[in-house]
Length: 399
View 1 (cartoon, helix red, strand yellow):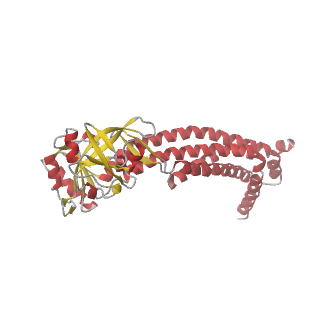
View 2: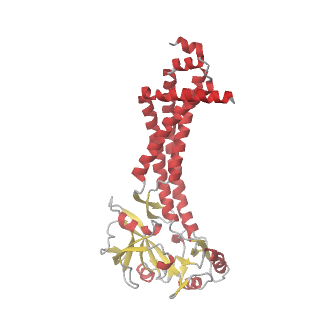
């Protein structure tokens, strides 16, 4: 016990001396911390893109909602359902109901081209035809300006994300889509979800406008509860009149976000990994300089009976402290610059733009700080070993 207390007292003394001498090496210390700051800033900033996109997709769903598409379809774009099939789906057990009937919305999904506000270049935008029950099925949708479209008329309402990203979508404006002109009558929000990237209109108007006959691409339904999903799914998949795929809405959007999420996360990790290699060499250089400048002090301490263990740990602590400072500053900068920044990117599974906001979450910040700590420990390890192995007699001769 006495030996352990002595070891910790030696560590405290050596670490205190090491940290007090950091200002004497402030140039190298700042350079090392700055390098790690850059690595963490890039890592957190890039991953916040993936996190924001993932959140925009996943907040769109509800466990009590289900999506029905043609069997074998990976997305609404690849699906087709005829009008009589959507009526059969509307009679299935487990559906929630209102005074107007079952909460079922048979929907069309059309891709249109609109110019971006920032660049003027055209981009693909989702144009969704819905039925009246859509506003009860997708109850996260809230009108924030104007009014809803009237059934049977060439009117659209626009998600906030689409209105911010694309030109010509202000309430009161008129846009030409396909062969028709449409009045923008309302602006809606959807808790930051993917619906905010879309334009909505009456499905009965959109069908003839794009020559879709009596066809739809999906049916979105609200169930009596999340537990009713199994009964609803079994009823549809066992019905010989149907050939459909039934998913929880949350599962569908999770799948839709997976490709982009993995791509951005992978690229961000590779980029920050390459930068981390440079940061490690910067930390190595700083700590080797620290050890070299403290050769006399280390040798004196060893001659006075201080063990090699406290010396090793003190060097590692100094490197870790510099790394944590850089990591915290890098995470803070990423939060200030990136969090909430709105943009749009292509969802390759629907070939349309999705508007979303970067999300610098607490787990991302923690991940960045841990990444910085690892860089600091790796960068300080070899200089620490060198300090511990430095022969006392040789070091004293360097006085």
